[in-house]
Image (cartoon, rainbow over all chains, first blue to last red; front, top):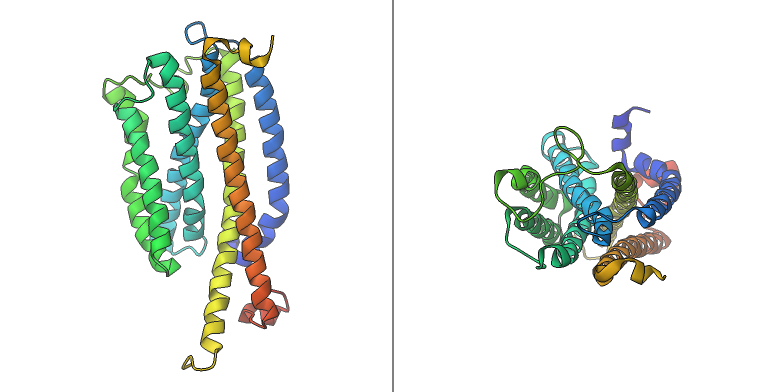
Amino acid sequence: MALIDLANPTRFLSLARPTLPWLAGLTAAVFAVGLVLTHGAPDDYQQGATVKIMFIHVPSAWLGMFGWTLMSAAALGTLVWRHPLADVAAKAAAPIGAAFTFLCLVTGSLWGRPMWGTYWVWDARLTSVLLLFLMYLGVIALWRTVEDPSRAARAAAILTLVGAINLPIIKWSVDWWNTLHQPASVVKLGGPAIHPTILLPLMVMALAFTLLFLTLHLAAMRNEILRRRVRTLMLMQAQAAPGSGS
Amino acid sequence: MNLFSSLGPHAAFIVAAYAVAALTVAGLIGWIWIDHRAQKRRLALLEMGGVTRRSDRAAGRPA
């Protein structure tokens, strides 16, 4: 089956139905391994056991950005190719990306208080991630405000592409400005600056969180397709009703 | 030594971070599951009322 064939929502649903249980099972298995590794990971020589917060904070941060990247790719699909599933994918990703960004902010705050002595500072990294969260809320609000899904999709796609400017700012904010947040220690030139005993659980947890994102996104896309079918049928029902003028 | 005390003096922050993560993930899963059930129920109600898409009628399958 060619990839373009999946553009058909019915075919997408028939593929999602058998895939979801397997993906969910794989996610649960990788999470179980990740949590065991997390529990057994040694304390950091400076941060002590609070380094365990990193195993959920860093994957959440990556997925908050991944969600917006996915929405940006889908926005191109909506605006350039008018791909039938592109706006479904974008709309379904927004609340999931927002949830992971929220998680990143909260866990970062809970990590910052014992390590920095404060829950929050208005430095470039923290502020740009907060902005990402607010942009997610803006896109979700836009989807809910405009009733016609195709009009909402175009407006949300433009907002998403404009908001994508924030992604490199988040990534390189710690290099461009003097921030309280530490610089990149995993994805950096010269390789990770983290000991393998801590890096391994982090990578496994990142894989688990990514699988969770993909599982939830697939399920949310399925829901969105069903929602659009309900809308279509309700419009047909309204048009067929006596006195509708059709 | 229980789990809480093994996490050192900042155990409350670590446990709170994992609790928020668990609640957020559970909330997402619950919301998507409830939404799926709601959409399926609405589709079934419309179908019971005789409203189906042309493509479904042609293929002889439910909406």
